[in-house]
Length: 265
Image (cartoon, rainbow, N blue to C red; front, top):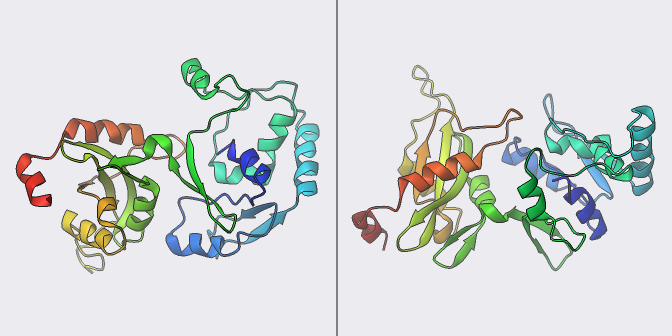
């Protein structure tokens, strides 16, 4: 996310950071206004629909300088970011820190820092994106989160966006599960909204319900082959779902049985 604050404007595109915790309706409202340059910041939408604030290049430049002067940021600082990154561009720290030579690295992980610096002066973010004919730059997924199933590359983010549209789904994350035939198949980890046994306003949801819901909105190869229900998905201290934990769980599950595989074919 940090690197995209530079890469997207340099590519001539408009940077619009979206709060991933918003529901599909709210996100769609934000995306309909995305072409106002340079940076489009939105409120969280806590009390009403998110409100957009447009910043131009000059405004961002002045705010970046202001963040350095008023906050007395020293030369070559190390800034520990602890808040959701969709707030970052509104504070201009992403550009301000770079202006004074901020130290960009993985905390206490020199191997990861070295892996993303190839020696050619560029920082490799690990994001996978496509440029559409109309100039729209779409970030599809993290390269490590892309699932390769039967030779097809599928975006875990696209599958997750469909899952979040299900009325009973509270949280969703999709990772690769090893498969003897397909190589990998999408495995969805889901937590459900609380079920009210008295009013029964939220119907009980099964693995079959989730899969059938996805079949109506996704190509067949992108539909989760496995759905694992959890009370809550593992998260970092800032609320980010820990996919590496879920990958280990999916890996430990192994490949589906031969009988299950035959039934899919």
